[in-house]
Length: 392
Image 1 (cartoon, rainbow, N blue to C red):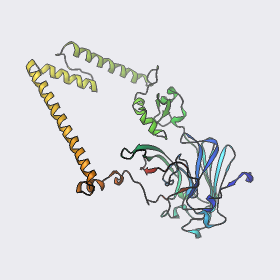
Image 2 (spheres, one colour):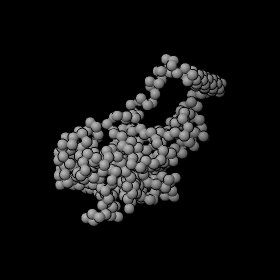
Image 3 (cartoon, rainbow, N blue to C red):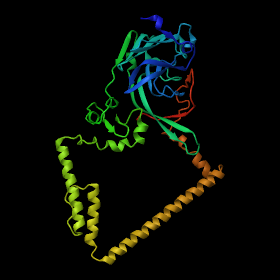
Image 4 (cartoon, rainbow, N blue to C red):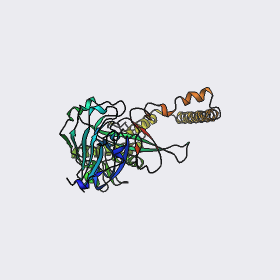
């Protein structure tokens, strides 16, 4: 349909492991985030992240069939796309696998619709997808999204490290990907769609939606705005489940229980002020009740004022000793650091170098780990290092 409006990307159709940005004429909702730009890769997938890096296959992708495709090995291979204002279609046409050309050509496409639906269409799949080798390139069919956290490195000014955390993935059964087949995925509602506190905290959509008054945003805490959510203190605010100038969103029985607990706490505080020999509180111990109970027990047992003063003096002495020990430990750590800085070949320096954070299992840089390096056709902006974390 409307073949005159179909654009064949000349560079992607004649290169291997390349990616190019494509602007959309509409807002495409992906995991609740509206996208106006995507990145099409020769390897059979679309990258949806904002910052293009060299490990596009790791996460934040829409992959009808991610594999080691190389359009440059055949003159008939093309990567083309079409945007009609309500849908974008990207098609990998007659592409071959670089490491197994004899398997034949693959023709498939991905369609992104304005309402958030995603359709994978398969015209030619000459072999079972499960038989495609993943030695030189990951083989994936599905979706993935992640959030990026920026860390500043104190030792190196003006340098930032970005860590990618994948928070959700959809994996389709590869055995069902055959000739003349299609897969349609319909988006579920997300917390980001709510614009007010009331509808947000009352939402029953399968996610624990919370409202952050500072950001004026509804979220479950796991989306692309994760860093803003944490930096603004939204996780602490979300525990209250309350909206300003409104009652807490709870059932009547829960509200009644909360009121009784508050009344009991106030009564215990009042008793403590009036008499030191009052009985211990009989309500369920809360954090405040536990502190008050200890206070009452100490007062009831202390019949001699001099004994209480002696106990207070002991506590002060212990506190001073603890502070001195802490100061000594900090001073020793500073001296050791200075020594290792000026003596990098010492045994202590080598010991810590071998155990630096870049070698920790939770912080894999993934060089040569099966994630091929993709080069952007039109690179822009500054280069930044990326660390890929495991799925949340």
